[in-house]
Image (cartoon, rainbow over all chains, first blue to last red; front, top):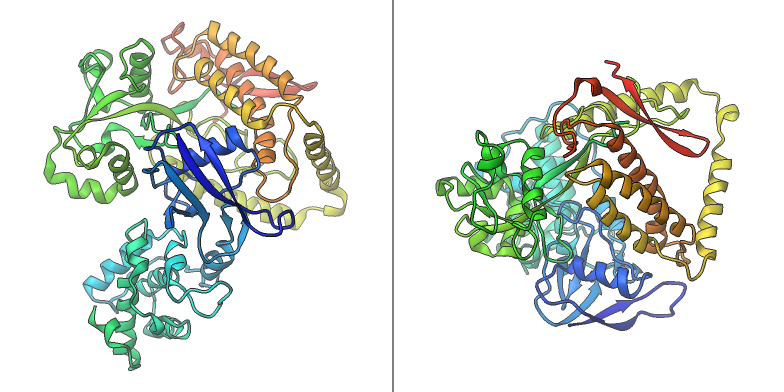
Length: 237
Length: 337
C-alpha cells in the first residue's frame, strides 16, 4: 500500500493549492507514471498531470517526487510514502501540470530556423564539439531550469541551462564566424555569466546533458573570443 | 484501408505498472547474440524459425513469443526470458550510446546487470505501429474535401508490414507532399463558399455538452480498458474467425454501453473528457480493424490468421472500410499502384 500525498489546485475553482492523500493499493517498484495513471483511472478522474510519450522523448512530464525533480515516465517509486508536487518554479495550470511551454518552448521559438545542409564548423575544439553534440539530447523538460539557483518565475531576460544546451546546437552549426560571435553575444545578454556554479543542472538532468559543462564551455569561448571578463569559477572547469 | 495490418514489436516491458508495453525493441538492437527462452528453458525460436531464430522479422518473433505465453510457457509475470549474456562485451559501449533510453529503462526495472548483458531480463510483445489508415491519393488528399492526411494515420504506404526506419521517412516525405498540396489548394479555394466548419464545430460542441450532462454513466477510461482487453484478445497478434466474430459482438455491446458515457466538467487538462472523446473514435477504429481482419482470410505480413496460416494470392488486394448509412462495411478492392 502506498501513501500518496499530492498537491491539488484548480485555478478558478480553488482559492489556493491544497494537499490530498490517496491510499493506493500498489507496491513500490512501479514508475511514477504508473502511480499517476492508477490514481486518475481508479480514484479520481479529475486528477491532472502531464504525460505524452511515456518514453523520455518529449520532456513534458517533469514533477517533484519527494522534493526531487524527476520525469514521471523515467523514475520509479521506491518508498511507501510518496509526496508529489508540481515542478518547482513554474506557474501551476492544474494539479501537477505546470506551464513549461511559455518558458522553454518560447525560448526555443526565438531561435532562427536553420536552413540548407547542416555542416559542423571548426570554431570549436574537439572536446567542445563532442560536448555540444551530446547536449543535443536535451528534451526541454525544464528540470535544470527548475533547480537553477538563479531561476525565478516570470524572469524573461535570464535564461536557464536548457537555453544554453539549445544555443550550443546553433553554435555547432553556425555558418560564419559572425553568426558564431552573435550567438556568444546572445549568451552574454541572457545572463550566462551570472551562473554561480551550483551545478544543480548537471546533477539533476535526466538525460545526462551536462548543462553546467556547456555553460562553462560557452563562458570560456566568450572569454577568448569577445574578451569579456569571466569569473574564475566558470573558467576553472 | 488495410486496418487489419497492425505491427507488433516483439519485446516490451511486461511490468511494472506504468511501463507495461513500453518499448524494449527487437533482438537486433540488443546485440548480435540474443537468445529467447520460455519458462521451460527451451530456446523456442529454433522451433518457429530454425534459420534466423531470434533475428527473424518482427511479426514472426512477436507471434512466437505471444504463442509461448498464451500456451502457458511464459514466465510467472507474463513474459519470456531474453538472454543477452552471450553478446560480445566489447560492443557494450556502442550499445549504451545508441540505445540510451532503453538501456536506462532496463537498468531501472531489471537492474544494472541486466542492462549490461550480465543477466537476462523478461519481455513480452506489444502493439507498435499501424500500417493501415486513411486512404489518400498522391497529393495526400482524403475522400473528405479539404482534409489532408500524412504519416502513420494514413494507410497503404508500407503494405502489410513496415521495415524499421521507414516510418520517419514516411513522415518527412508525405508531410512535405501534404504541405505542398495544402498551400496549393488554400490559394485556389473559395473559402466563403466551401467552409462548413462552423456547423462542424457546433456539432462537436453539442457532443461535448452531451458528455457533461450524462452524470452517473460509465467513464471513458472504463470503456477504453474494456476495449483494450477485447482487441488484445480478439484482434491481437494471432487471430481466427471465431475470435474476430466474438470481438465484433463484444464491441457492439460496448458501443451500447458507451452511449451512457459521461465526462467530468472542465475545460483545462480534463483527462476525463479527453478519454471520452478518444474512446468514441477508438470504438470505430477497432470495428474497422476487426471487420478487415475477418474479411482477409489469409496470413500476410503482420496479419496472422491461425485458421488460414498461408498467404493466398486471391487476397492480393486492399481491404477498404466504407461508411454506408452510418454502418461500417468492409470492401475488398484491387490494389492500385
